[in-house]
Image (tube, rainbow, N blue to C red; front, side, top):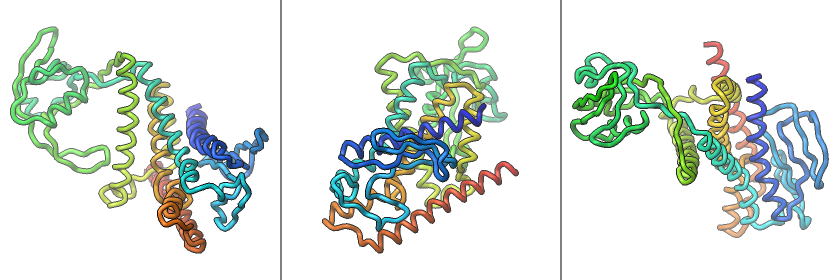
Length: 350
């Protein structure tokens, strides 16, 4: 069941991406020949509005085949009025941007739905207290609830962590313990830890871990919109940062995941409930949007790069160069997919 949900989620995200391209192409007067979810042999298909809509056997992506555009052979062109090739660079860029934009919009909608349902957040309830840490020496205990820091009310674990990390000097904590309020003063200590990218970093900490207690956020209409916007922006920034760290070598290539990781994480999210599935679907949707904007030929970003060149220099990219760059793009793309699959298999074996 979890695998089926994973397949449906991934296919739905790909569908929305390609639907963005489809509607933009039709709006620009471009004839769309094929709309495919998956690659390889056709499983099922039907023809509607002049387009063949099909489901293919390999669910690792999808594509919209427009008249005059063929990534497998960039030299194949058509100059009919309803062809992609006769459109201006600006119109082509609009069509190409529509796919990633659809993923960002979908992520926003998913985060908005999550906000309406009341997302779970960690409560500021202390679990483990590290021995000889500032928290331990100050007398903080397991199951203490932090109500405020330096007079600032605390409702989420994240708020408390941010205040501690940005602090300068002593902190005054208002703590609830067994129905009584205690006031505790302590000074954070710079400690080595690892971040979400498995990098060793130094940050101010007091030596406590979360008890894992959570509560639902009750959000108004304005707060719901803000939540959806902030989460979409945060997810986009997170993915861009991760890509940058991967490219410059700050994060090892073994951290790259592939389709198996995506399926496994979606399955795990399914087991945790529908809210987790929506969270993960939103994150993967943003991921698809960001990755497709990379300036790699064979991806939307690569085609945008070619059209920006034409827009700036008033001439098309040399056909021979375009073919070579497209082939190089496919090599890079398949190499990254292969590396992700290799890492996935290693994780499973390990």
